[in-house]
Length: 348
Image (cartoon, rainbow, N blue to C red):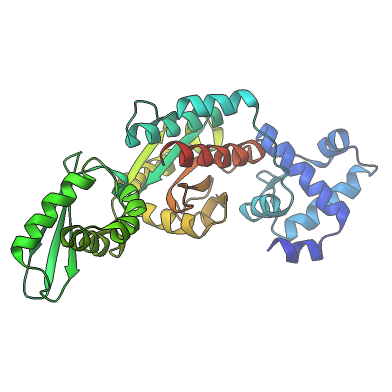
């Protein structure tokens, strides 16, 4: 979209549009030609600027909320601004240290680190902070293989938090019941108190270094049951803080139904599977604005989201900020980007 509009708009129109959006992001109010003459440093008359604003409105980039109150960017206009005109700032050393300290993993569980990361990014952005993670990062307490029929096994994964997950493995009757019991006991002692990401790191070496048949068979079974079987991410961890910050925004607070719908979506969790999949395809920070935001599908809300990765560069979750369309993107984008990198380091 941005490339096509660049071709249609001249440099002067783009500069005036940029100044108007920056004014809106700063004040939350519409800007008119007289405001832009005073603050923009343009060597143009109010009439000339009004004409340009009128053309920008015809392009669908601006709208007038009231008859003579100036103009504001539309969702299309905000996306055009973010995609091509936004200049990112830098987060301060103080903010960096604050994120590092708050997200420290020392003496904390995986879940506690993610919860603190959500609080940290909410506090620094002054909006809602959200962290999403597949539940297969939680530590395993016990695992067991049992035979279902002549061709299939079931792997039962019991986690330290009390949850249980079952996975079906095709083995064509290859392993006896007694061997499955031995493998279950061996693997529980070997991988108890570890999460699946940690198991994945060591399992290939385990197979190569196996000294006996039990080790070899156990490693092959765990490889089939964990590495080659897709985890269930339909019910991921969700850590959300700073919801009340959304009510401070004048535009959002006028539509409490929108906020209610937002929190309903978060409670359902179903849409967050899409976020994890989208984050996995993303190269970095992504910005979802208004009704184009595939998660909330409500105008007036935006989301800045980035994946976080482990040391093997595997996507293991996503972190972001939810707020009004009038977010301070130049600050929040680098903030989300930096926090995602810190989380990836501390929870690996």
